[in-house]
Image (cartoon, rainbow, N blue to C red):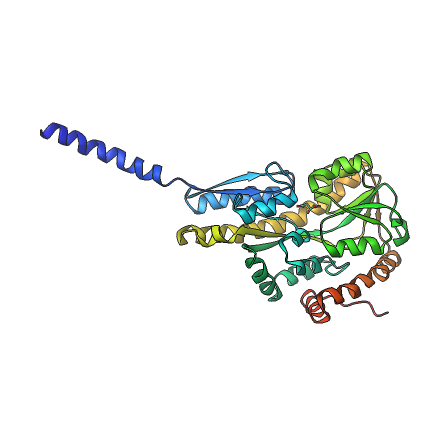
Amino acid sequence: MRKWLMAAFAAALFIAPGAALAQQQPIIIKFSHVVSPDAPKGKAAMKFKELAESYTNGKVKVEVYPNSSLYKDKEELEALQLGSVQILAPSISKFGPLGVREFDVFDLPFLMTDDARAHQMYASPMMAELNKKLEAKGVSPLAYWDNGAHVYTCNRPLSMPDDFRGLKMRIQGSKVLDAATRELGALPQIMAFSELYQALQTGVVDGEDNVPSNILTQRFYEVQKYLTVSYHGRLTYALIVNKKFWDGLPDDVRAPLTRAVKETTDFFNETAAKDNADALEKIKASGKIQVHELTDAERKAWIAKLMPVHTEMQSRFGKDFIEKIYKASGFTPPSS
Ligand code: LMR
């Protein structure tokens, strides 16, 4: 009698923890994105995985899906709202389908030409108002990642605004980017990031704007002849989660994840600043594309040409809102 009791007790000693462990399967966090693993966002996604798994002692497992391998631009936002993926870091220029059109305003030409203004903007209380609108759509923004300023690439040299006349230019989805492209006399084409290389290669579009790290890691410079360093706009990501998923996390998981988000955001902003500067140098050194830095006179001509977009957007967003954005970003419209 006693022997089988001892044996059963011994078995319980060994199985119980195993069973408990089996019951505590890690919480899976799927992180989908559209850029290459060696672009700033690709590196940051892996940094988040490393920190999240370490700070939660393995209570979460982060699965990273780069290069649109799980979802393309539009699909990934839908998947997040449905809960088929838990975390994303899309460009805020693609938030239109979420129905929070106010984010388009960040694409106003020359609104945030330098890093300091952008960081000032994303640290401003203004963002809290916009975050609430996103939360109403079932999406919680955890952080904003600044991936620097845009440059143009094209099969035609772009020095003066008139050089855009009649070109087909790929844009991300925002209405402001659409208006700015039309103001330059070009035809805007919204297109998923994953389709862009081929579209440039085959001439479906003549050009696009992006940050140097994307142009390098996606090899756009191999299928374009000219690059203009215009810094006319910015690429900002919002690190967003499915709200129900995030709110439903146990406190002892959400707290270490929040710490991982904070440290990953610092890592991202540092990495992006360095990688974009390095990428522009590497692209220049490749000799495969002709690089032109806008002169002050050319920049003035671009700003004058594109200011009507700011005025046009006042009717869309309201003068007060636009002025709040100017104040938060430190932008002063040029005196006419
Ligand atoms: C683009 O579509 O050009 C970018 O938003 C891609 C990205 O996520 O960097």
